[in-house]
Image 1 (cartoon, rainbow over the protein chains, first blue to last red):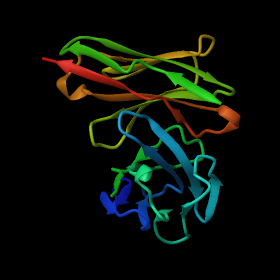
Image 2 (cartoon, rainbow over the protein chains, first blue to last red):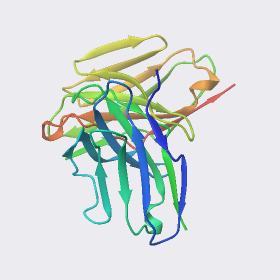
Image 3 (cartoon, rainbow over the protein chains, first blue to last red):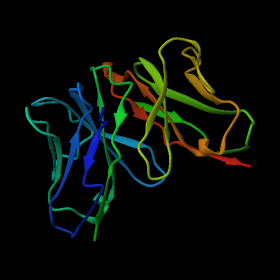
Image 4 (cartoon, rainbow over the protein chains, first blue to last red):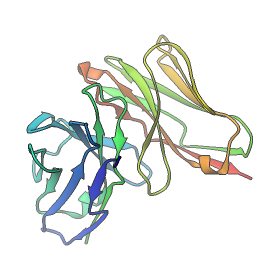
Length: 114
Length: 111
């Protein structure tokens, strides 16, 4: 019974390139959340999606960032024209219901922008 | 909005008991969660309190007082492997279940 899967685990991009982060939720989970974590800090909510719908994107920067969760396939967090400040760990979590207080996290993608 | 306060670091010795406190301010409240995160690892769900009182799960217990906007995580019979960061998270602001996380408490367990 696979847990939440994320890939890649590490991603290096030069400034101005695009970063695509993938997340496959736990089997049977249709609710996906993306978080960003800087060193020595907590998890900052970015976006909450259900299949084919963005439910809450209040934590997502208005520019360069987008997310999707298609009917088939993983959820994608896309960062266009990356800047050094985008360097962080990006975690995806899933939950079986919309009462997402119990979330199951993936191993994260460490994005480094050079 | 929401804000949470928890100590940045706590140290203890193996076999001891340690309590990690969390105070919060929120415009709406559904519950308080606790997560554990080892260095470089994924956060792992530990517990959730929606009602006042103590919830026990093995060596870990979590307490909530809604009237005091306060909760704590209690770890008993500490083991070296318990060295990790512990995050409290509150949900309910604006009617949303999405948790807002504190900055985390680094627990260091010494032999």
